[in-house]
Length: 411
Ligand code: CAP
Ligand code: MG
Image 1 (tube, rainbow, N blue to C red):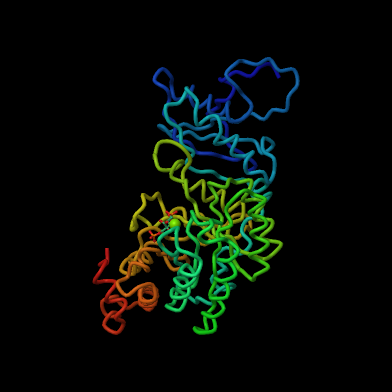
Image 2: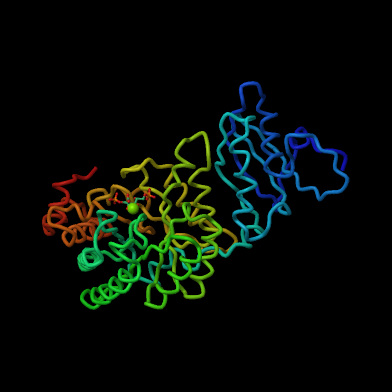
């Protein structure tokens, strides 16, 4: 090898091979730089180059190649040998690492990845994926329904469990902890786990339906592993992990522990917007969802296709990717959440289909009749939608739905 300069990393005639990891970036060069020079620096810094020209005696050639430039869209192909199989933090330190802060670019966003088979299948992928709808529940053709007690934090364990019981009895499938509830003194993990599961059993008995509880195990990795063990010992089918705040290495570790217990993972994504909200910089939610699927979560929040309270990206496109064929790895069940209420269900289902989980917090517990009526209203809206009956018509026989529509409307 004679030398490595920035120019060595640009080759617009290069055709990526099937073994390459191909990444699409949005790149805005620094004011004094052409896009070609910026693209070359991106490929360099994210593979084996640096700012200084190197004279190298002996080194495996792991250079990435900036191989296409279309306006601000830059394609970079990475050789598979650059990556440690099954190590997501290492992959990200390459393709979404130092380049995010380089002076050579004003803005840079990792938009999409095409994962080669070898690298993709070095990760386990989901244990269950959307099969949870049949394997954990018996939801038939309808979306599964989840709720998270509100206020997010502060409910003592008994009250938290009471709210959960009301929701299950009203027709919700899944009770979920909120993201900032883990193991605080007002509602300790152990008490919440055992008492919620006892209430789940009662609700199953009373309704004849399968119910489940998503306990939030997020924390330092060794604590998460203990919490997963306890959840499994107590008969929990699911745990919730906040995948961005906890980090991908920890997600991988928890995924292994969950497999040993046959427990599914619900991925919450708090902090994703720090990466994906500014549309010209960071890492897209599409890529975050890809990382989550490879690392093996079974369901993940992907937004509400613009119907809810939070700014969203392309929910529909992300969901399609989560369902798509990926060398035999299982799919992932998308979760629509954030500002949803019963009146939005028909439009939501028309945008995202029924192979999803619909989660509502305020849209259930804020019902004028309380949690039980709110849960009934969300279930009624879902049943009506799947049966092809308009909410207005259905609500004539179901007063809880009528009250929800009166309060929140249908938009
Ligand atoms: C929803 C929620 C979810 C967000 C996550 C909340 O409550 O519990 O965490 O939806 O957002 O805390 O806001 P509401 P996303 O139903 O009361 O809005 O799905 O976008 O990751
Ligand atoms: Mg929440």
